[in-house]
Image 1 (cartoon, chains in turn green, blue):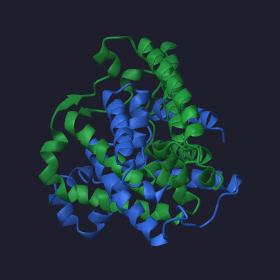
Image 2 (cartoon, helix red, strand yellow):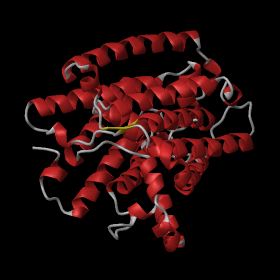
Image 3 (cartoon, chains in turn brown, purple):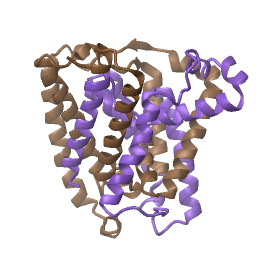
Length: 200
Length: 164
C-alpha cells in the first residue's frame, strides 16, 4: 500500500534518494519533450509550436488515470496524497504574474532548470532572476501577507466542488484535452513559422 | 521525442512521485530553498526574525536537505543525460535572430523575477501547482493552470518582438 514514505517509516536518506531519482526522471522527461528550448515553449503563445499543451495535458491525464487505477485496486491511498490548498486571490494573482514572466523569459522554473542542464545561458540568467524573485517575495512578505493568506478555501477538489465523481470528471477532462489537441494541431498549421521551427 | 510520448513519460514520473512520496513534482520550491538557505547562511538573525524565513529553520535542519531540493538536483542530472543522448549539450544563448543577446538576457532575467515571485504567491509553479495540482484534481491546480496560460496569452502581444 502506498504512498510508501507516509505509510512505512522510511529512513531519511531513502526519502531523499527517492526525491533525487524522481528528479532525474523529471529532468529527463522535460528535456526529451523539447522543453529545454525557450523558443519552442514560447511557440505556445504565438501558435507556431504547441508542444507545451500536448505534453502538459497528456502528463496530467496519465498521472490522474494512473493514480485512480492504483487507488481502485487498493494499491494507493489517495487521501494521503497532497492536494494543493486553494487561496482565492493568491492563486489567481500569482498565476497572472507567472504568465507575464513566462512570456518575457520563455521559461517556467522547471523548463528553465531543464534548459540549464544542457548549457543554455539564458536559462541560467532566468533562474538567477528567479532566485531574486523568491528573495523579493520573502522580503515583501509582511506587506502582501494579507493577500497571500486571504480567501483560504483549503485543499478543495474540483470533482467535489462540481458535485460529480472523480471518474466522471476525469472523462470530461480527457474529452476537453482531445478537443484542445485538435485545436493545437490546427493552430500549428495556421500560425506556422518555418523560419523558427526549422531552427529548433 | 513525440510530445504525446514525452507527456506519457512525464505523467509516469509524476505518478511515481505520488506513489512513493505522496506528493507531486516541483521546481520553483527548489529555487526558494536555495534562497532560504543562502539568507540563513549570510544573516541568520534576519532569517530567524522574518515571518517568512523562520518557518524553514524551525526543525533545525538545512532547507537544502529536503525532498524538493534533492529532486531539483536530480533534474539537472536527468536533463544532462537526456541532452547527452540527443546530442543537445551546448553552451548557448537561445533567442530570435531579430534581438540582441543583451535584450534576450535582460528579459530572461525579468521573466525569472516575475515567474518565481508569482509562484511563491500561488504556492507553486507550472510543475508543483498546475501540473501536479491537476493530477490530484485540486481546484488550485486548475485555477493556476488557467491563470498562467490565460495571462501569458494576454501579455503575448506586448512581448511578441522577443519571439516572432
